[in-house]
Length: 287
Image 1 (cartoon, helix red, strand yellow):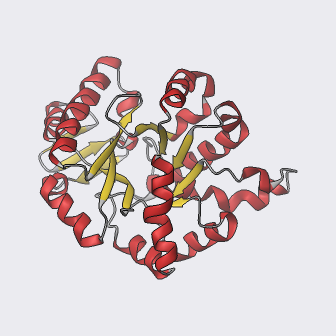
Image 2 (cartoon, helix red, strand yellow):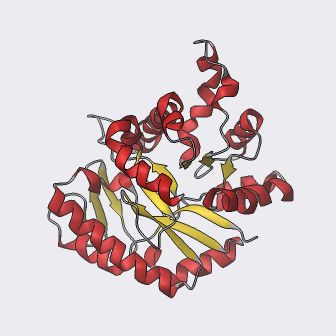
Image 3 (cartoon, helix red, strand yellow):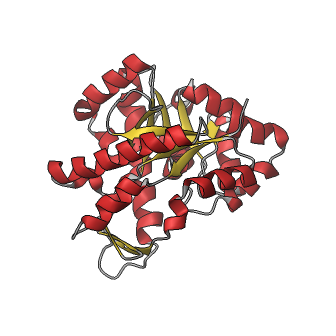
């Protein structure tokens, strides 16, 4: 088995160029990414393929799954603008996958496509099961993976810069996870789903769920996975105590986040747990 990271982002040159041509968010202006939630520095080196593969080698990771992060807000754009960005990312990503010689896989944004390991969607989409049905039906037929990731968020007036990442993203992910438990998995029981960032800490709410009369054991599903991106030992340990180690997978959120702290935490549980999160569970998830 080979160690795998299920949560990375990589922008091909075609997508970077498309963002740079735009005059409203999401856009690149010089070395700054402009979103509805704020402005962020952008380093083109973060999307260099050779550097990314070297970083995998450094971290002892053989392969990574890349996706187009829904936090950019691409899905909410008018159809023509959305399609231009998505097609630019897809075309460039296919080239990157070929050039990476098997070391990269990808989730396609919002559609089932040949050559992709599954589909990525924003967390809010999970709450609209009827709207999501055609996609999930097609994904079920292909035995693909659904990757649920935070979507775009706007800062409330006066909020600190960290607000979206801490308050908004986690709330979105908790709602998505609970929506899947409430009706998604009964409708698509064989679809494998991975929720980013520990589903925003949704497992921490299971005791409160039990107080509402729900049998917490009913939430345990072998086809529902949580990636550990951006979390450390305490959060991961709580999830292991809740679910065991089988439903956790390693994700780093590279290059948005530095993977070092999370990888160090995973390794701190010992070789057996490290191997489960990076090899055994990821292989089962991706089939």
